[in-house]
View 1 (cartoon, rainbow, N blue to C red):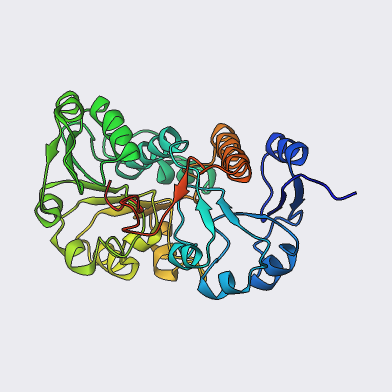
View 2: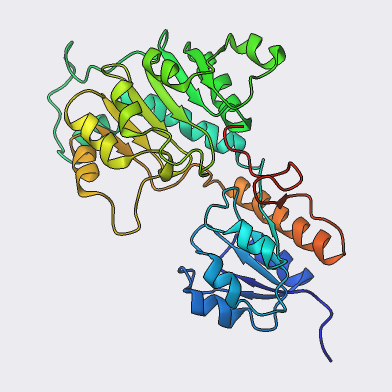
Amino acid sequence: MTSSKPKILVTRRLPESIEARMGTLFETDVNEADVALTGDDIVAGLQGKDVLVSSITDRIDAGLIARLPRSVRLIAQFGNGIDNIDVEAAWAAGLTVTNTPSVLTEDTADMAMVLMLALPRRLVEGTQMLVRDGEWAGWSPTSMLGRRLRGKALGIVGMGRIGTAVAQRAKAFGLNIHYFSRNRRPPGVEEPLEATYWPDLDAMIEAVDIVSLHTPHTRETYHILSAERLGRMKQGSFVVNVSRPELIDENALVAEIERGHLSGAALDVFENRSGINARLLALAEANKVVLTAHMASATLEARIEMGETVIVNIRTFMDGHQPPHRVLPDGRHGLGRNTLA
């Protein structure tokens, strides 16, 4: 007897509770190896399936979308970012795409704040001094001097949910909040934060001590911190990025740190398709850069909430309704992807 349950392919392992719930609700095929699948693997795995539960490690471009079995009707992304999916090609092929927004706000904002503290206060370097060297000469008035956060100017690029959550945390640490965004926030948001809105990104980055990026990767935001803009930043300032690597011209960032114009960067995301930039790694070894392994959303709570959101999207769609977190191409019914929030 044929199962009436929706048939889904899950490309990466998910928390046990989510896999168990999916197994109850759907006919579920999980990639047990938990390594990125090739396009051929995805096409083969989707034979007779209704739904692809993808993640950011899956490259779902126009070529792959054209090869998907006709049974597939939904791409339910396990993640907020969807720049690994050609949404326009999916739309043209009649596929619905969903994501999991909103659930990552607090965890991502926490990580941004951690990095904002770690870099100027030399936290990683201080740990390595003890653990790697195994010796410590003891406290000294001039040892491990960092930089104070209170009173510094933080420039937030993209004042959406996450950018606002970062601003709230940063305000508690005594930072002065500045932001550039597609839309100015209402007084109810600005006033408690004492936030200054800048309609000109170039002007803002020239005025602040730390630039923190909180915008998706789109055509508009690709290399939003370009070589030219990085060169305009204040002498000795810092860059923090917990969003997408494509937002920064990485080679230009490295060059500005190497020449001493920027004091450093804290990056949870960085170019890694062909291995991490050797010059970036050298700067990390020299404690000019803090690198973390794409951990901003890596809490058990966040992953479970993401999985529950995927389940809601699948069930709503398979019941014949529009899923709550549908993603449309830019300009479609005014509900395209946010760029600068």
